[in-house]
Length: 468
Ligand code: AMP
Ligand code: ZN
Image (cartoon, rainbow, N blue to C red; front, side, top):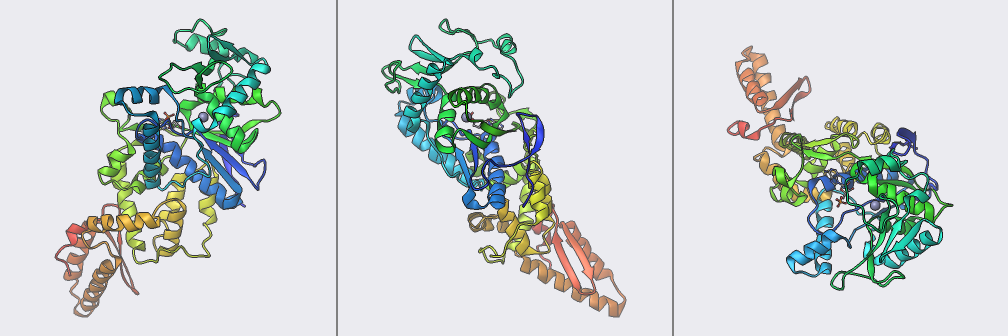
């Protein structure tokens, strides 16, 4: 079995991963707030935890892993969007949820085993809040319920801050009903025109953090293995989840391993609307960038390093995937049954998800097309859908020279020229032909068995037009 080591934010160390129950390995990842298209940054945790999900399924068996990722479908941003657009909230959240699934599907992400929506778990959240009040960890004030951070001595441990540091660092205006400025909202009142549910504290709605505590408890229990999300969620969201869950279920451990992906930037700058470098996954897909190119670029940077999205990287990824596609174009879409991922590749992923190394290993399989295809698939690349939809895309990029058959023909022609040259001792034609092939970005491999032409990252088929 592959040894999996993961960097645990809680201990700030890479640790050997040992599941609580190898028959049911459990992972929870914070999902999107559904009011708009996912931006490129939102896709990073999806791809990162998809790779971890695949690795866990491979290691413990596909039926022995439970991956939960929520949809936040009650939130002030959603309410605002509904007010601005005049559209019902349910319409906005349903539409955005489907967009998210479509866009992440285009990136080759498997769907989690459960995708709970916050609005489906309101009674469970209310029950948890009642428990927190009963245990002295929360208090009701002016229609709100607040978590009392001083009631939980480990508050701040995940992100390494004390309550005093937090107070000093916060600039938000403190609501008069809070006992401590860092106390956070579990429940708040709703205006008549806002979404709301009846509760012991009046008609209202949950604060953001409580949903993940309630849903992970319902679906994964009071102790589970992995909790993930972007590192912008570490504080306050994850800190608050821990406080709520550990105080409501003191016998449980909540999550054992905390994983956080670093942020995505664009051309070295923070992605933001004001800098004009903000785009959604759909924007890129609509520009004709295949989803797997986005996935490939993501996987080429380790998840704990800031990821810089650049056009250059997208082009390079596209060229590599084009090579992979060309090498495997004639293969049956059915994966070989006896497929077992290469242990080196599993070890790379097991080393805190070294996806960059994993891609390098896949790339080195080009002389064995079936291996290449099976392993690319394992990494969520070259899936049947992608192959069906983008075969055209890649082949048109290669201007008809995409099919490996055509490169093979050029190789045969060169081999023939070489044989003739051996007789005539005049190698000039061979040299000229070779120069053209190399200029087109092909590697020319000559051996006594023949000539093999291997497209490199800069392969440009247009430069081969007119050759025979
Ligand atoms: P949100 O909808 O803002 O709660 O974000 C959904 C997920 O996307 C969370 O796991 C965030 O940490 C993650 N996320 C948001 N922005 C970025 C970014 N620029 N880079 C990487 N992850 C991000
Ligand atoms: Zn969460």
